[in-house]
Amino acid sequence: MYLFKKKVFFSAVLVLLGVGLIVNQSMAQEKADGKLYGKVVDKSSTQALADVEVKLQNTEKKATTGEKGMYAFKSLKTGTYTVTVDAKGYKDWEKEVKVTAEGKELTIKLKPTEN
Image (tube, rainbow, N blue to C red; front, side, top):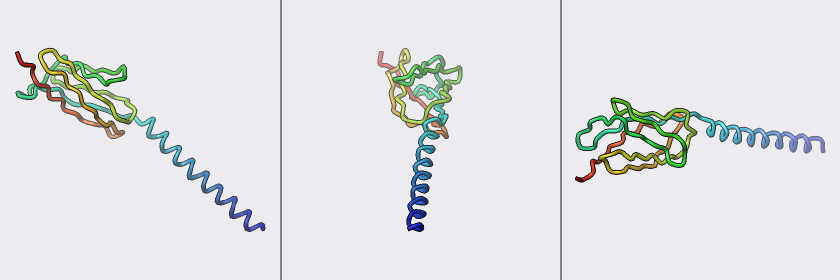
């Protein structure tokens, strides 16, 4: 009887440790700082576009490109985001991207609007 109780006790401890590791892993993934960065360019000329606002839908986050067309979002939770761009003289642009702890590079190529 003693041996049976000992086996049950150790089995329960192993199950609880396993559950604890799984919960800890999922919490670590949720807290991970992801990064999304890249460049906004004209699709036909590949020229960098400055002063273009890049937004992450359903968040308050936005970034404006610099002189070389570069943008960056830091300290993002890992997951999927919808990136949008609405630039004067260009067609609206939207894409769903997955951001990981390692970061995600995304070049945005905008098409000029027809005149």
